[in-house]
Length: 426
Image 1 (cartoon, rainbow, N blue to C red):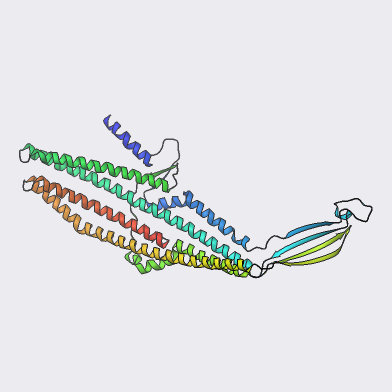
Image 2: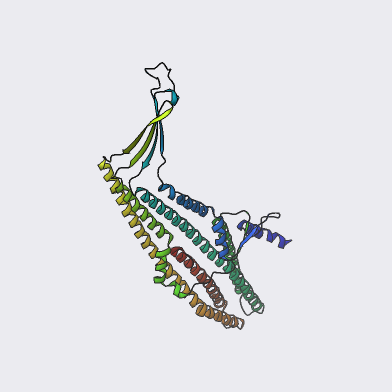
């Protein structure tokens, strides 16, 4: 009965975190275990990314209409409705009035304007596509980072549980020696106090793990029919040659989604500037008018109309605006590039620091701490060291194990930052 009561709070925590099914009768999809499965799900189901893709498609749909001719205009003129000078009564039928003019007018923009409008719209579509790719890069970064943090929490929980088991063994040794009168009771009390502190750390880690799972559900769009598995494995790290700054800088310049969006914004601004200069020339309208008199068409007229660009001061202001917008787009791209390269250098430095920490911990700190604990435990059993020395050795090995899994998690976090900057997985 006690075991059943203890299981219920844990099950409630896991249910809230999304690690247990919500109930019978519901078809659920189980994802997780690997970060790739989470990324594939988010690409298909995340609402924000879906909205950005739809906006990009909408921008692409604006390209063809931007370069199309304006719709023609049809005009109908009924002349002499009163039939002045005749015995006929006023009328509105074309065959029963003086004459009727039918006019079809086709506006014709000046040469090159349509091409420039289409080029500006195409650049706008590329910018929207770049923003959509940037949205995905941000979302993928958060998923990868949260997965790495969640994996660290799971590993830390396992290590803490192992340390608890080890500390229980130490307590048994202290009890045996205390019963034999070889050590004071304080050793047993300190072993119990240490275990209590470790249980408090374990509870905090379990809470952090549940929060990480809840964050992951939010990153996936809070799907109601999905159950998340805890992280199983970390992604493998790429080869060292793929993490050189020069190679990554080249990939960043070529594929960074925000830089691509900035470059598209520059092309759009260039097209708009050229279009503004083309507004110095008039637009044309060509019209054809058949004229009906009674029951037959006996006249044809051709009309040519153009606007006169007289407001030069206003037009010069528009040209200055277009120039400044182009300069601003270029400066924005330069700022984005500088920030991206700075972030790349920072992430690479953090990755290298985590890699060196992992290597140092795995090859030196952890073996030394393990050897030190074994020696301290044997010495304590033989009465050659006090309990404080043994406790310090136990804390050192626990810290070394946690530092190792944290360094591995930190490397994946930094790798996710780099992949966000270069716009693709490494």
